[in-house]
Image (cartoon, rainbow, N blue to C red; front, side, top):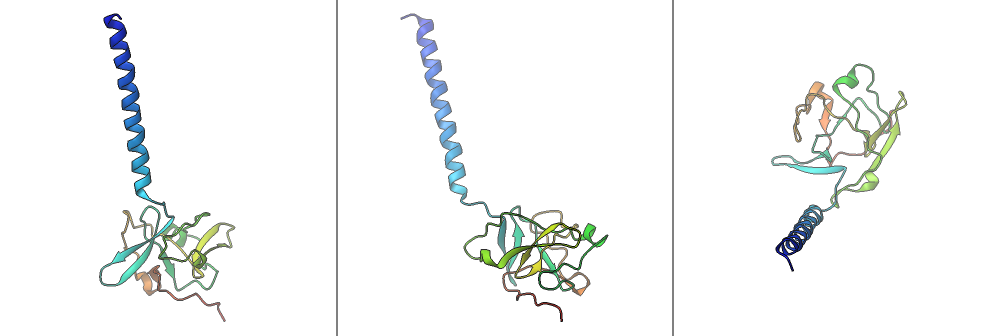
Length: 153
């Protein structure tokens, strides 16, 4: 066997070994992450938990809405963009049945939690920002303990 053939064989085996190592690393990395949720719970040390989307962005609701109906429209949606995900996946601490979707007056779909339409706040720039909490006395961080929205009289 020539020296070239030996080096060629070693080179091929090393490439195969490196490929297997890379594949194992990718598979182990993916398997260790667990499920990917579209809604998460994040802790607030002094208050409890609040809801975020899968990327960690805080979700809000407003007292201006009623059960299954968004009353936020027009330019207000620039500040409070709607949250919608067609495939809600939640951790075991939340109930999937608490989430639904509504068709808004503008024809867009919006995810609801316990009947409350969910929104982002446009000023929240980073995951877990909560700048919108309490704005105008009607905007609040969505949390697992909110009661079901009730229909307007």
